[in-house]
Length: 296
Ligand code: ZN
Image (cartoon, rainbow, N blue to C red; front, top):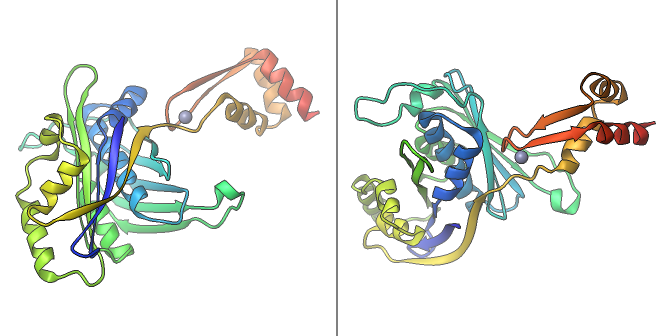
């Protein structure tokens, strides 16, 4: 199971969140059949959402969303407070040639647009408060920088964000994935900031150390260099959707009895595919008749 840790350093003026998300991203890629570049983009978004979801308090669900002009069309990644992550890209098969440095052209498939963070709370206790929505323009399209820009602009938390996905040509496609978020809290010493910036500028590729078996604690060590830190919390992270046959049935029922009747007449059933996880729900004629019986 993938793991995430929260840590603190320099008298709580620096907050760190790190995760290894190789299995989570693998599962997302397997479910959505994304192209390599779309997989890199989706994996970075899922990892970023997991890190951010763990660091911000007082919400049940955090959504990171990109709406963009590039050929991927958009990306959504959701994380909840239990470490469940799910998400998808609008155009899974989009692909562009690698950049001259050999990296995936993630910014090329994203193009210009807006980066959103949406926080929702109150579900667990039956409240539906207005979601909190923050947004910034996409500044790089490489995603890690977009999370960092959002944190600085919208949450006033100067941050460094590293996100990586390493792929290979055969199953399980994702060799390594993970990320680190370093957040500077009010009162942080300038000297500490400079030290961390310098360390991060020289940090090796996250995915190559994750591939060698690095833990989230070791990723934090890499980001901090000689600065001591304390682990506050750890949790599991996994790709997990909350869709179910029950939800599929209630979504079909919500279409109204006329629509359900025509599905029954034309196809003697219905098929629903969950956008978040690509799970397919086959509804039989009997399922539809049951919906109609309840409706009438
Ligand atoms: Zn689902």
